[in-house]
Structures are given as structure tokens and as C-alpha cells.
Image 1 (tube, rainbow, N blue to C red):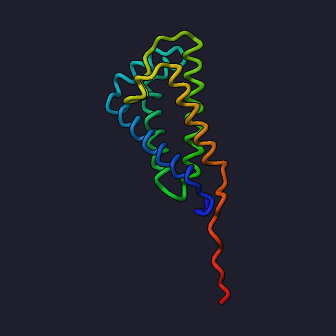
Image 2 (image 1 turned 90 degrees about the vertical axis):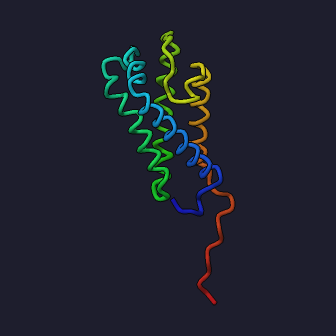
Image 3 (image 1 turned 135 degrees about the vertical axis):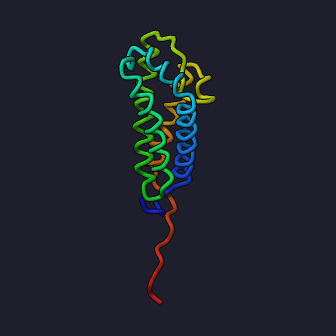
Length: 147
């Protein structure tokens, strides 16, 4: 992505998702046994919990790294949008199934109710989409080579 097309919302989204994903991944890795235990009780994930418990934080770390590299930030935002969409679909399923499992997304986010978590995720999806779609209204002027 050309620097002239990056907007303040683009940079905010990049740094927000770097913090979000690295923070929650670190919490999931540090509390891996608890995270896996919660996933194992999910009707949707249950038998695959051992794999998912490593796949989720690994994905979050990979996306965080992708967002750190300027040349791959757009890809990182696309992956953020995809991952947040998957998480949101999972949360909606959990709410509609009547699950009473605790959230173990990491840190303070784990204290949200399922409904609050869904709204938080929707806001994250909107942020990623806006960052990817909103063009810079004032791109820098091209430098003239004429003297």
C-alpha cells in the first residue's frame, strides 16, 4: 500500500490490532491450559480444542507481526478483519446456543459479557473495514522533477 493512501484511521487500526492481538495472544499462551480447557467444553470446538488452543494465539501473533511490517500492513488488516469476523460468528453461535462457558479471550476482554464481546468485535470489524476502504482525502502532492 502506498504511503499516500494511508489515513490516520489506517494507522490507528494497525496499532490497535497490534496491541489487541499480541496482548490477547500472550494471555492465551501464558494461561494455555485454562484456555484449552474452556475450548474443550465448547460444543463447536470440543474435540479439536488442543489444536485450536495453539492455532488461535499463533494466528494472533502472526497477524501482529504482519501489522508491524509496513509493506504487509494492508494484508495484516485484511487478516484482522477475517479473524474478528470468525470470532464474531463463533460468539453469536455461543450466545444462540445458550452456552454458559466463560470467555477466555485474554485479559480485560475476558470480563465482557457475551453481548458486550459481540459489540466489541463488531466495532473492530468496522474499524478494520474503514481503515481498508477509506481513501486519504489529502494525498501528498507528487514531487515535480521539472526545474
